[in-house]
Length: 283
Image (tube, rainbow, N blue to C red; front, top):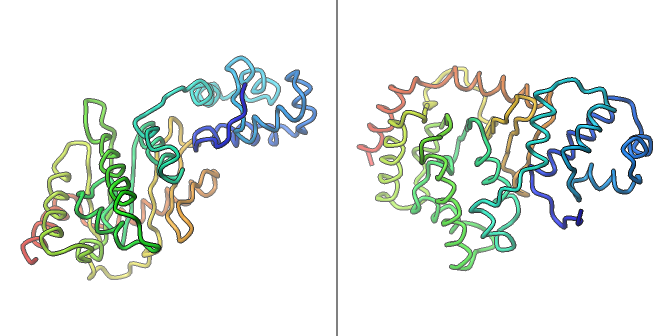
């Protein structure tokens, strides 16, 4: 197989899981390569996502690693043979790779959960709101760069369309609802869009109000992406240097617990919808 210059997040995830299986089996890279009938460099490339792996070789590796979790192996095979070139590919080379990786993860997700404190979640944003967010970026984007980012963000909303919409839950702090990243009219339009989304069957929107007592979870912003199995879930966190993709099982378990805590502290969906509606009337 040809060597990839820049593996996607899904390709890297397959590579990481194969390396974890080998390490759990207590095999060295050289020994595993020998069992597979390849040289150590080839195995290293597979375990770094630089080259793909066929279904036959993947199942042989799983056998050598004594992995008997059939569903997990099948899920890895699905990752290995996936050749999807989705709408996000038109942005390759034009936008930073994490933009494309996030869109790809969302496309393959079984469910999505978000917690946000300062911004409306990207999948629920209006174009006016998104434009105002990107316009504030330093260094300043050119008009063409800004519009490309807005267009990409709007296209991500495709997961809310069609017959196979996945469950989506967003927990949003009142601060994000009140901060006017654009003008008053754009803020009203954004809140109206939130109310509209909250009425969709597959969307749940919850609000954490300012007056909630005993809430110490203000650093728990996250995007939680459900995989085909819990051990293939992914957490995405934004930081000063860009998005970080988290996939280690202990960390995933911690973020599951954290989401449940934040969710339990939030208003129920009906009260949250009323809260957003009242707030929009204040603007």
